[in-house]
Amino acid sequence: MPLWLNRIAPLILAATLLGGCVGTPKGTQPVTGFELDRYLGKWYEIARLDHSFERGLDCVTADYSLRDDGGVRVINRGVNLETGEEDEAEGRAYFVRDESVAHLKVSFFGPFYGGYNVLVLDDEYRWALVSGPTREYLWILARQPELDPAVYRELVKDAERMAFPVTELIEVTQGDACNDRR
Image 1 (spheres, helix red, strand yellow):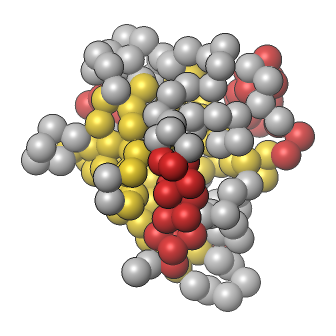
Image 2: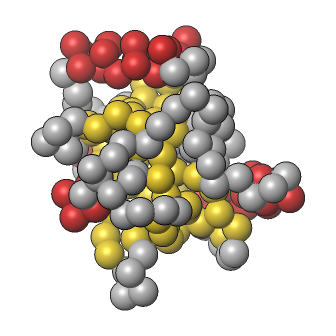
């Protein structure tokens, strides 16, 4: 079993035992008018809140593609730059409601799902603010390994307005150290 899956499995199991949370953080709304075909492809993780299944990883990317069953294939990759250990996990995601609402459920382990919510999305699908089912999970994603600092600051302000603990955000290394791994 991949290291990433070893890290995420206990978390997903705990979430499932506590009610299988595929919701959105209270007081937030997923993006409407969502177009999955524009969201598909590679995204770079610019920043995140720390959690066990990505702890110590940099060069993190997420690749989204269509599955034969109508769902979304999710391939998350990252590298621990200190050890050189690479990590990869494959999951699947499905819309919770209407496909024009960016509220999905994602699973990396069996029948256990967690929420995946796009809360802020650029009109050109160049960057996004994504949460899990609670405020403990937050990611800033971009189509390029670097994000304009002004856009980053605005996304952090958006997250702060939604009561996420933005002072705990970890900026993910995506620079030259990652180039050989892409």
